[in-house]
Length: 565
Ligand SMILES: Cc1cc2nc3c(=O)[nH]c(=O)nc-3n(C[C@H](O)[C@H](O)[C@H](O)COP(=O)(O)OP(=O)(O)OC[C@H]3O[C@@H](n4cnc5c(N)ncnc54)[C@H](O)[C@@H]3O)c2cc1C
Image 1 (cartoon, rainbow, N blue to C red):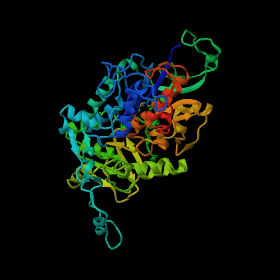
Image 2: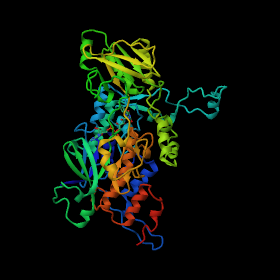
Image 3: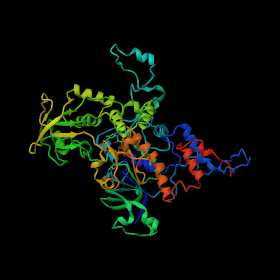
Image 4: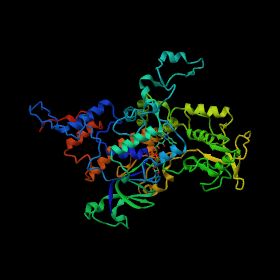
């Protein structure tokens, strides 16, 4: 029986960010320059630095010569020989980012929605921008007109407030100085940068298995009745008491000391209840956007090829619904009927700019210092505020609406449908009785995915054995993103929303989640006596130095006694 040090479930951006961060010795992606330099100094010189003790006047060790493997800045970005025994399981494919790549290809998305610093490289917060320059691919960065610009003074802003006290708008949200961050990368540029991260950290395909996890348990080895014992687990009493993770997948059983859950929303896509909708999905007449296999589906394609008129109904008010409507029209569908239950919201990013722009630290501080998880959940709900579309897609939508290719219906709910299996068309009724749609060939529900750990099948055993509080379906993890202090099941991405904030489901959440998890994974494995790329702690002061470097404790406490014998 092989027990992996770390098993990551999910090979999407969050899983990749976590794996890369576990192999990065000098992380900087979430640190300021000051912290980064301090970290590098400690890493490079640390206890080896010659420090004169002011009391004894004695020198500590002389500085050793620089090692050839160490770069000028002290970074060693290569995978260590003592790399962790890491395994990554993913239901979608045998490669990193299989789901991400599939969806971007299916939806024909050519640019990301998020700004340049939403990226997953742990070595540098600005790694994506740097990569674009290094590869001479700056042309693949798309500007966001009106997003960044000259900051408007309070005085000028006051002038733009009308007599009713309403701000008339029209000013950029991001200061000119930060303009370089507010471009969006092309899909291919981002994919290539991820490839570069995979290569640099030695995260090849040999670490990945396409397996769908169906159960997670955490217990002593004796409690797993069917375990085959061999040399990896000794029969020492400490091992008998020690707890392990047992992961059941569609291919077998895996064991690990630490598990990182990076499964995105975790749940299956949800389709709102509609009278007359046949179950189960998939059905030839409808699909959820996340489950599209062919777009448009074969029977619609056949009609397009035969030059017959075709109609598609798309339900949902987020960016995906507009992207799919645009794609359907480009691929020959005659008309798209777009239904959304609220109004059309226009936003650059799917979280409010307050959480992304200049004042994001204030917002984050507000989030972290909130008294309760209920308050945090409320902040997440407000910051994300349902589906929204970008200004760029607003223009595309407007053009289709004015050409009559899209019929847009806001504040409208799909009430009932009836499928004619011979004609392969739907008759629909909606809450807006004035909507009279012709027979519809295909319905797409771009209605997102809810996250609720109570309904995620593979989290039932662990919740039963180790109950956890939830708010709005999200687990109340501890501050280390761990299930609780005794269960080293780390959670990142959307399910860690109550700890990471509204950016949790996005690339920025993947990077910050990885950073917070990595420190604690090291701590857990060190306690288990596992050797890792960090080496074993030589002394208590070594731990203090690391805490100092990571800005986890008092910055100066760890310097007490430096140079003393
Ligand atoms: C079309 C689209 C475009 C987007 N564009 C952006 C963007 O531009 N910028 C941005 O920041 N965000 C964007 N997002 C949000 C995006 O989902 C996240 O940024 C990113 O995918 C989150 O990564 P993740 O790893 O947390 O989750 P996912 O990408 O969902 O990855 C989770 C992985 O876990 C696997 N998994 C789940 N359950 C199991 C199981 N039981 N067993 C094994 N494996 C399992 C899945 O197969 C999947 O591969 C976009 C989302 C969509 C749908």
